[in-house]
Image (cartoon, rainbow, N blue to C red):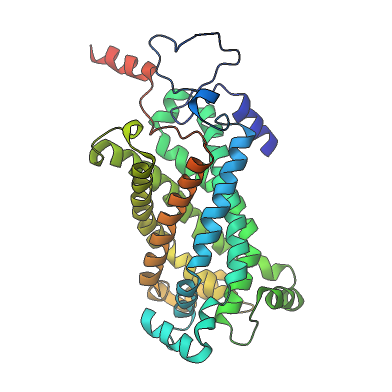
Length: 356
């Protein structure tokens, strides 16, 4: 399946608003076709390290995903730990600051780093799949739709591509997430990933690592759909209405500032949309033998919003940093970075013809 996706992306003319166009055998001194708006293809003169849509491009995007997700999630482990404990034991950990106070009093400062290893490995694997497959599916679906439809229905394209990518990313994440939550929320269970994973395997078998997969999909797929679609649209709107000059005239630093701002805005919406499922995942991995439906019923509607404030802070910061790092990796590796989508010339001609 993936080989066909990569081959289709690689061999396609890439004529969507999201991609670059490159001729197979460019003539010497040849320029763009008159009357058609295209983006410059990746050539040695342009400074790009690879062709947009190539296997190398997708592989390097995956590297950016590993760095952006693995590092940022590990950085906020203390906040994530307190958030998880707020979700599963509201009586003991009354609020964010009280949660930190209780944790430090009982376990010392080192206690705040519990679960860092499964977080690092799990979210690195998730980031590889999330960003790498997103780029693959975005190109693939755009080619299926065609140039005009890819522009007209670009928000749906972002949603479909991100949902498809996250489906596979969560399969990679689930075992590490189960170990992380056990370490952070079950006193005395284990202190390290090396202790937790064999213990889960012994007590619950392989299903112990994946019993939270469905609620993980329920949490992460809406989160990722919001993360990517909201980010893409926010970037488009910022350059259109806020930034006083086109992106092509902005410096690399100015572009990364726009990326960070759009990422934070997207992160706030992500946190709200995915929070109830996040609470269920935390409680489910703590309570052995329970199902997602049983956990949701026991929590009630209000209980599924426990820990929302720290999660907004955490996810907003995480999402902004992830996009900043991911875009920064693209800059550092000289990857092609197409500008925000513009209406294709053919569609403009059709609309002008109708208005006359």
